[in-house]
Image 1 (spheres, rainbow, N blue to C red):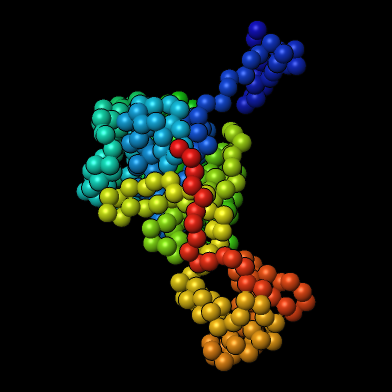
Image 2 (cartoon, one colour; image 1 turned 90 degrees about the vertical axis):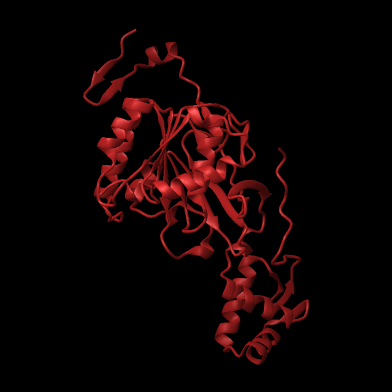
Length: 339
């Protein structure tokens, strides 16, 4: 059976399609990392997304059965970790810290390269490294420093980088995972792909996106899968525990009331104070009076806080102008994930 081409298109007739059996979608890690798809892990500054990426690569290379509770379906792959940000010394420190948490035997499958200098493109030299190490998974940490182009608000600059990655995947057959940054702000809106740095061209190109965030709990991170053209995926917020002593990440469970964990510390203290000074059931005028008396804020601020606290879920409207506290607390038990 011959498949014709028209320029950049492959032509498959309906009759030919009946005789073709499509390749099944393969997963490197269940839910988190499909094989052969353009994937991005993006997150806030300081959320340990680089540790997340390196730990993931090392556990795949090591032949571990799970990563953050998700099944590693393709074990002992050749992994190339590409650092463009922290330099060789810090990269090696992180490697050593992570390996101490593992029964580490994956050194023959896990290789690293670290960029020297900030202004150069990585792509020609990365081609040489790929030819040398023959990786099946390439982790680029991070995309922002992969090119001399720094203005990620322009689609033309984004397309240059995504084009390089697509070409690299086509030529090498490797899966490429890019680690990426968030824009500043919009913290209280949760984890959604619009927070990723860069023009919409990056979102549109990406075939699988996982987002990662710090929280107002110093030892808790939030993770969410927000896009996949490869698989069906859960819409949950996962709580990821950060062990600051061992420099290691582990699954804690599903976070149902995730909004409370992204409230800024200053706002959190104010809300805690405001709620502690009001009864379990109250009217709007009682709330305003309490805020003006105890928090020294205006009526306008008091009503704004009321809407915000309702949105997060600490109170509910039971009638016009009547409110009731919910059972939500600032510290919650997270639903454990089996396995």
